[in-house]
Amino acid sequence: MTPTPTAPDRPLRGADFATITEALDYAATGETGVNIYSPRGELAEVLPWRRLREDAVHLGRRLLASGLLPGDRVGLVAESDGDFIRGFFACQYARLVPVPMPLPAPFGGRQGYIEHIRRMLQSASARAALGPEALADWMREAAEGLKLEIAGSFDDVAADPTPGELPGADPDGLSYLQFSSGSTRFPLGVAVTHRALMANLYAIDNYGLKVEPTDRAVSWLPLYHDMGLIGFFLAPMAAQASLDLLPTAAFVRRPLLWLDLISRNRGTISYSPTFGYELCARRAESMSVEGLDLSSWRAAGIGGDMIRPPVLQTFAERFAPAGFDPRAFVASYGMAEATLALSFAPLMLGLRAETLDVDRLERDQIAVPSAKGARRSREFALCGPALPGHELEVRGERGQALGEGQVGRIFARGPSLMQAYFDQPEETGRVMSADGWLDTGDLGYASGGEIVITGRAKDLIIVNGRNVWPQDLEWTAEAEAAALRSGDVAVFSVPGEGEETVVALVQCRTSDPEARGRLRDDISGCLRLRHGVETEVVLVPAHALPRTSSGKLSRSRAKAMYQAGQFTTDAAAVTA
Image (cartoon, rainbow, N blue to C red; front, side, top):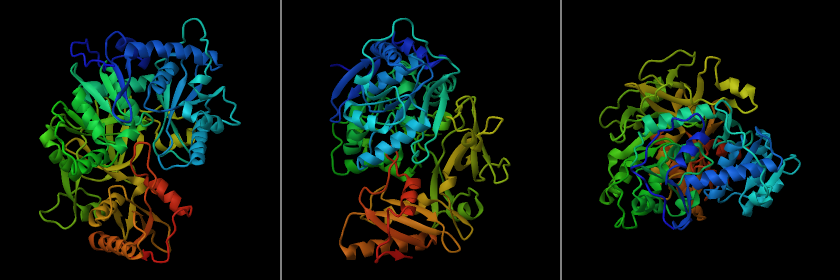
């Protein structure tokens, strides 16, 4: 097999279509497509956009023949394979609404996964649940009693398609439902119309990444997550680019496969949360980068978690011998409720950050440059201005607009915003105003017309009148304790007597009582010394802390598990 070409001579249209099916219709006139790789990094399937369109139309007719009606929701397990991709577009052509669902977590149990999928199907009022053949029985169990037309795998879809033309997509109709990566007990489906989707894809392709005919995308991001689905499946297709797709689990096990794929196929655009770059840099400590050529990579995007400039600097240094240009770093900001993207930093300027006085940030909620050699300082990345047609505004506690450098809650408005949380009018009303402003739930400030993200409002810890960011405590603990890795610590606050209690869950890989005691002492001591925070340190087993679908730590789920008694403080635990 040979991957689809980059096709630098193709007549490029940058997502200027009314619906996503129109975009695929046009992409299908060329030679580009999606190339699906195995967990070992070998080419497993070549799916030109032309063949994807043919397969999707045929499958769409089969779905309708199975008893589904236009407008019905279809749960699809988002494996990084041709079946999910065909299923997603089959729904689009049949005017069904696909609902991408996650794969089982590597260390999760069958029953917990089935219950999670069941909640998603119920929230979406789904009429079908389809996944890989290996998960067919799981889908059937999750669907028990829900009166679905189909549950299992694509083999359970009617073999004979309905004749005639498919209903096709409506620009103002729903394109898909996206469950946020943190959706657990009460999942909220973000309802995105074709019009909103195409507005975001147009902004990404033409302004955020400025896609060119010579571009080729490479991704390991999960297709269940908005950054994987929108940013690195639909955005390349809408610009008629070829895409090389690596399974997420393969990246987690062998992160350098990602870079090898960029090198082999001369990829130009690829994204990752910060932790992905960190995994690669750490792996490169013990492996040679000889043979890698990353000189083609012009947009190395960062999104999906808090940006950590020191980590990215380490990555740039490790892979400089392989031709990586640090100017390729592109910080960005967005969320599923805005389809995906809200802002991009300017291209080919690299990562730009401001080093702030943490004391002023915590005490006064003001972004003040840190004095040289200050004891408590931290870098925050500039994530660029709002995309054209979109607005970002920072507001204070009374809802008033704040000036530059003042930290507050970020609100967004523009053509890419969701229609609503599906069938959840009260939840929608909590975050969306009548005049179209979305409360993102993020905290940050404006600087020179660009947005800077400082954290999530719901995660903020209040200590003696100071606003403390949990990631600051987590990163300090991971940096100070040699036994810890990135993502080993989750910090949050819980109600206590008087002030709230700050809890640090720490993944520990030793059973030696003396070593465990030292680890508790080291963490509690450094958090007291560096941040002035008294902390209850709870050691948990390796792999015990929950992750989102994109692989980042889920602090909210860790807190819920702790409060449910799933993590207990043993007799030797330290409360500092």
